[in-house]
Length: 99
Image (cartoon, rainbow, N blue to C red):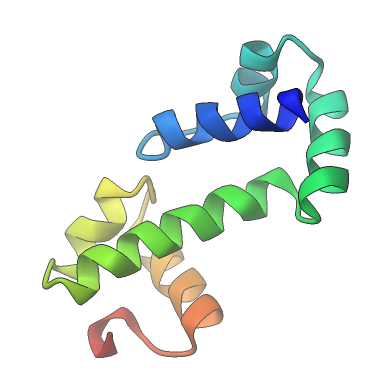
């Protein structure tokens, strides 16, 4: 699906910044609700969860290679460490310091 490919490309290009659904929708030339519906249907995950998972994987790669967890989280687009920490444990089952 071209719409989903465009949305994923936009997400990949802006993953380290704040990403709003409205910005992605604008880049895809559709409404936010249309984008949300089609993305969820095609990817089997809501767009927000897709973005968070992508950020977590990127941060995990940085942490495993020796980067400080706080700086990795900020570089990967998380707004604060506590939110990142909770999401990291939820996704990987261990705190970032345990790698």
